[in-house]
Image (cartoon, rainbow, N blue to C red; front, top):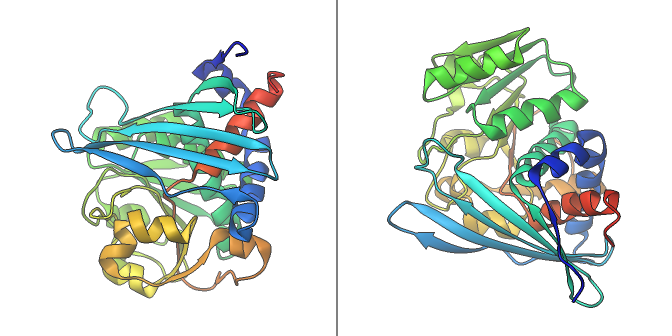
Length: 306
């Protein structure tokens, strides 16, 4: 077997720029929704009852991108002084099955998730967005500010977090035109784009707080019994997902509200389903292995690992 190359988080961070990642993710979402060249089972999860955490396995094969990969990811929501998410990526030769590289998966997860939201926002936002609201102040909040700012120039960014000091800290990091808010309703008032990246198990965002025509990227609540978004809001919005099959199995926001899924975002990219920009839209993101695989492929290609 060839030597397995180990790629650190520092190298992944240096290489994985949003200018190359966002277009690659957009292409992969379209390829996935074609249902012809991407083989990707729904995430297989082992639940850890004592900590309310889980360990998930996310394999994928993409004929178009010549990718054979798997991500192993853990999520422990009770973590206080360390991140709630940890991951590693394994890349194999798609022709021989030989393991080629082991990559730190934390940066890949953070960046590909935010890049996916940026793509969804590009297709679903109504006009030129001025106000961005973030619910949550962790790793995903930071990555979403960076990714969305690659495509849009926001006049105002507002942050809410269940621990107010977290919102204050992130607002100070972002700086100009960024404010921390004590209430969700204050943060999302008249916001054009809302991103929910919390560890909440029950809704934090409600219908009567959201401006009609706003676009929401719902990123947290990755279990079928968890939800970040009020059922009335889910049912009244036009709902898009990354994977219909994955959402129906894993998304509490969709399962508990019984909201109808209008389309996968890949269908919109392909032009087979409409972007309902004038209506309130929700993009429910659970994350897909093809997103991880495409991001990892960009890294190993840059490093000359083939």
